[in-house]
Length: 342
Ligand code: PHE
Image (cartoon, rainbow, N blue to C red; front, side, top):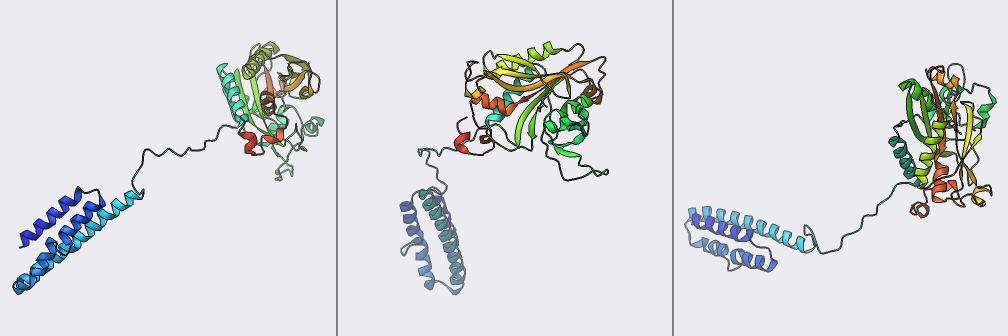
């Protein structure tokens, strides 16, 4: 009898393993556990058995009944669950599209610039946004109390040094990294420094408190303005994907001598004069010049042996020109209706 019970159990479990449909499962359950089922028949017969068998067989058949009931229930849950989409994947249902973001227009232009400069052998460096007064001004030949400090409206940080001076600023330009780079790598050196800069300004369509620049630096023996012009012309052509007209004017920055302002022919009217270029045909694009001997000295570079040029491109302005954006504040607005156009 015991063997017979074990056989019934094994048979039921074997059959169960192959069943994937609810009606077949229910039929199987009936066949074993139903009123006329095999196991029920044995339990019914218990009364005709000896006391000892009653105990043994009764216990065993009950155990098997409980076990089989559980297995049937599990199998049923799986089948029902599948039918309701539980573990079941309907590969024919069209997928849900995942919404993908994209790179911010300034980051795109910055990436293009880095690629262009890298292809010319320039290193790409970083510098701190929270900068010391020393690197932001003094080492750039702008001593304390020099009127040139007022050229850039500065966010000073509230902390003071041991001489009771405010000596930390949010950097007003990427130029401090000129000196940091020369100190770290010496000469000759070719590098660019993309980064965010800060000015304590009233904002309007062309001014924001936070914008992007890329600083460039090339120091070596016999470097001249001719090298500067050639490098910049190549980069501007690369960014705009066409020959860009370039105009060089004298300009004043304490850390270069001579200092230059470089304009590009208006990309909107191509020099024909329009509102975007304030009817001049030209757009101010960057400051540059030959690095001042004092700045080379702060960088630990011998001005008798080496010379070099530096420039600072307004990347935010470049992005405005490239994508014809008329309000600088849109870049930091986080407005998706604006962002999604790029
Ligand atoms: N740092 C200057 C600015 O922010 C730009 C500049 C860089 C000028 C390098 C000359 C040389 O306006």
